[in-house]
Length: 114
Image 1 (cartoon, rainbow, N blue to C red):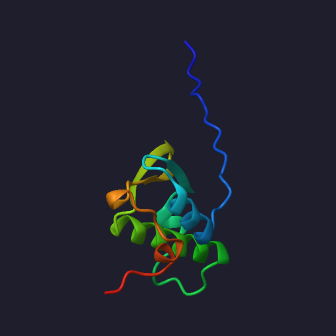
Image 2 (image 1 turned 30 degrees about the vertical axis):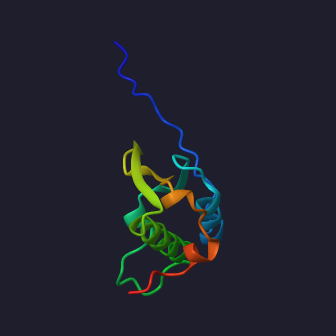
């Protein structure tokens, strides 16, 4: 009997900027899917009290905050898919716009007023 476990090769997608992500949301058709991060997001973005975050951690933290904000505002559905041990694919799915309206890019780049 063969006890070898199959291995999975995981290729890290190119990091996407907030601007490119918002551009995608603005033009995406309902149901379109985009992987915005691959890894373990809560660890990859660093700890909240961490003082010396790397530029990569800062970019991941800002991007994840933007994605979550857009989901909270109703532009996206978010989900994650396990790829392997401590590795996930984080996915955004475009939601339909109310009344078939188009999304203004500047609306996506600003924080919702409290």
